[in-house]
Amino acid sequence: MFHAEPLPVFLVASPRPYDPAALTLRPTEALRIMPSAINRSAAFEQLALPLFASLYNHAHWLTRNPSEAEDLVQETFTRALRAFDSFKPETNFKAWIFRILRNSFLTTRSGIAASRTVFLEDQPDTLDTTASGPTPEDILLRLDNQAALQTALEQLQSPLREALLLCDVEEIKYKDIALILDVPIGTVMSRISRARRALRQLLQPHLGKSL
Image (cartoon, rainbow, N blue to C red; front, side, top):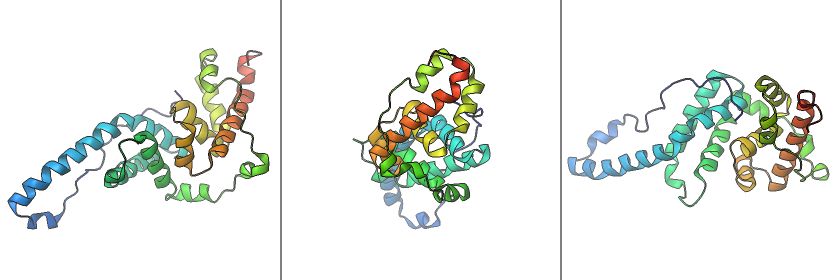
């Protein structure tokens, strides 16, 4: 719903890089292993590729740079495929891969800098778990000015914006957002509440008294 720049077209890293050790396998062993590897890769692609645009969009908001966002998504796909055996089918794949995206971001230069920034509003005595009022979707129904919305989102503090995007754009549940961000669920609720309130205030001039 909130879109970054148009998505570029680029290739995802090969899920099976060249491995000279594979040449030592006897033909019967290779035939036995190949179907399993192919099925694993196909299962991963079936789950991951439909999320490509969402992952890039979120990566762009994290990095604020198209090129870095591309690299981050590439790294996320590579790490996710490598760890795919650890994914539990009964759990939320979208939340699982978004957590990998965020953890990959935290290893980048900009991610390391962001992780060192203390978000004081997360102190327990300042938490506000009330998330009342219209959501950004409600606002969008009455707001045609996408530029104003983009500007308002850019003015939000990064932790608030990230929680809001995961909840109201990606439609990920609070408990899964808590896992992605590695924070208590109460903190997630508080950040979303603050983000919605701040967004309403920033967009007020464009909506008059409708909020």
